[in-house]
Image (cartoon, rainbow over all chains, first blue to last red; front, top):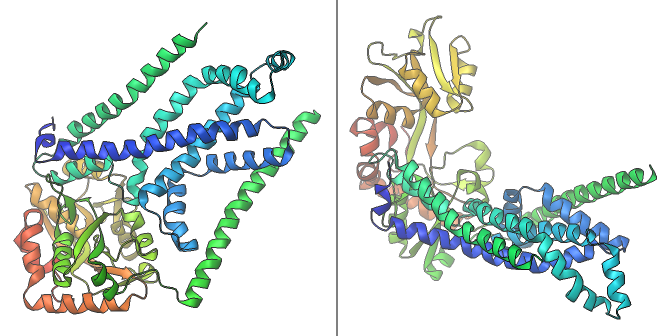
Length: 222
Length: 292
């Protein structure tokens, strides 16, 4: 079945190291994206035309560009054009944060516009300031509405990190390919075992996130 | 209606803006690039700078067995890596291997993110405009494998009724279409489908990179490589950033002197012999940078 190659030498440890590399990039990017996404998303609902055009342009730009192209632009392009030499990991965190922020912001925008105006008006009439209205009334409601979609985005970001192999980061999928190729002759069926294991690794990472979201949805349901 | 029109205008504006920013990026990049060329601002590290830093960055494949791959202990191995190890040793520096992909090899050198690429890098005119190739250390050409009861040793043996299998998008396809337009080609998209078709007797022969067909004939009984080398002889060579002459000269000197001790034959026997067998040693190995 091809599972035996996993127990050769340090192969299993290497897979876990690869997983850690992928998780480090995705979790840092996810945290940055949630934070910046909230800010940018709020900006997107503003009446100000200039802000709307800029945020809209940013969102569309990131959406059109394949992540792979963004990775090449940030990793190689910045060196070529500006002479900035960033590490591959920093470049990937920048790309994934830019992407995550854009998608997150759009979710925030959608959730914000779905809140009926009466919610704002009621809190203003209770004497809350604009900031208080957001913190105590609006944000708790949008977080609940955004939760399922954000979880979807986060798991998507974790899985897309496999692209960073293109700029030389050896993450879990790349380690898998290395193991399969190194054993091409001794175990030609290694692919099945290795990919099954990688599937399982992604699963044990993404499943708890789904569970957490279910738990929170239940908890906040009232 | 008014709303729809407004939305449409806004959408077009957004798209235009996005397009502008893309082309903006592009032209800015070109601008700096030409500026760099003008000032001849270097992206690479010279031989002395590498020696001083104590580490050399070498781009290799990490999943192309037997040229560059990683073994179960996490160590880089293979024909390219064997040479890399020796270069590092003779230079007296540590090696930092960078796992490269075929598509990013040129970019790595253009940005100086690696000092040398040793990743089964075929010398082509197009690439030579962007990077500097050192002396070659391996040959590549096309090869033709056929069934052992009807060995094709020359393409003239192929009759009008015969079909030759190729994989779409390979150099074998382009070469045969251009040079032998009379030969009927049966094209397949993947290696696996071509292999199955060939084994089921679809074609009299299968043309592909000679390293591929040689390895195939060695792994599968009943097939013979009748034509081990066909078409233009290409070579595999180390590459450095454009203009990095100190490093390039050092590598060239190194390859020449390694030829005296038959280094690349030893390299073949250590890394490639299991895949290609002893018969093809002279066909594939280039010793001392001299192509015969």
